[in-house]
Amino acid sequence: SRWMQMTILGWFVLQLTDSAWLVVLVGFSASVPLLLLGLIGGYLADAVNRKWVMFGSQFAVLISSASMSFLLGTDLAEYWHSYIAAVIVGISWALEMPSRRSSMHDLLGSSGVTNGVALDAMGMSASRMAGPALAGILISVIGLTGAYVIVTIFISMASTLLLKFNLDQQTNTRLSNESILKNLVAGIKYVATERSLSIVILITVVMNMLMYPYMHLVPVIARDTLYAGPVLMGILMAGEGTGAMLGSFIIASATNIRYPNRLFLGGSLLAFVMLLTFSLSNWYAISLIALIILGLGASGFATMQGSIVMLASKKNMRGKALGVVSLAIGASPLGALLEGAIANREGPELALGMNAGLGIILICFTTIMILAMTKYKRSTDSY
Image (cartoon, rainbow, N blue to C red; front, side, top):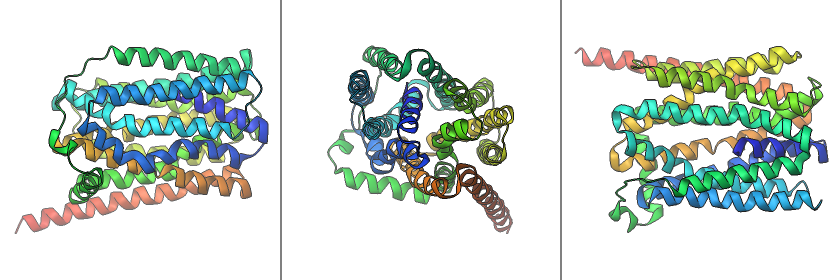
């Protein structure tokens, strides 16, 4: 439902304003809460019952979605209402994600974490695949209002399922009695002292600042470059989710992943190469194939991101580390603003191409630095 919402809101703003910049601001509004609230989400994952964190976040989105449906149905909706709805979705995501990921470890233990995260990523990928495609079809068949009503129904169903979710969790009483700020700072310090966690955070910042903001410009490119309507636009936006679901399924099915760091870095690099291909394409078929392969790479990044963090973190620091991941994901709005400014001035294709090129350079540089540090460590250990 989240991806259906973002697709509908983006198309709504594009139709009303005909502005790439204002469309990008929808994505910015959804991403900025991650930057501001990601660490608080990590704190809540350790301090209070995760079930109620997830339910409260989902219920807030339900109220927002119902309100937006009413505004659209009564012709009172303005384009700026989309930003309010997107902010609420972003707040929910920032607070809910660390609790959801931490719950996997509670349910599956260390041995099942990688497969569990892969299944979670596969579910998210399925929503990224089906959500935009379904949104495009619904917009074409029953209009924006009808599409948003369907979204509201889906969210109400998800909220009901969460109420029936049983989670055996021991909350950290000592953590609950300490100041939030103290625990947030502790999370940042902890991640900074662990090399594997620091690398994950660095790549997460690069991916979310330079790669993922591309999704906000897909409706603009679909309409103005590829001459596609809402249905083909939805299918195009679903391309990345299709590839990501396939990649997540392969990872979830693997019995043993020997080199998670290689999968993490290699997937990130592949995603940027395909983003560059997408930015250069004027053919719908090539653009769709590029986004599908981009999704394959992104699945390696997304799955290994959560797995590495949970396996490398101490039990009492896991929520804090995942909160720092949410903070790193919060780099996305900064990238969206830069991308939107360039797209508004020079065109969306150039904006995506510049981001892709810079991303490729940074991923390659990080990989070289890791190899150099590993070689240096081995040489010093031999003495």
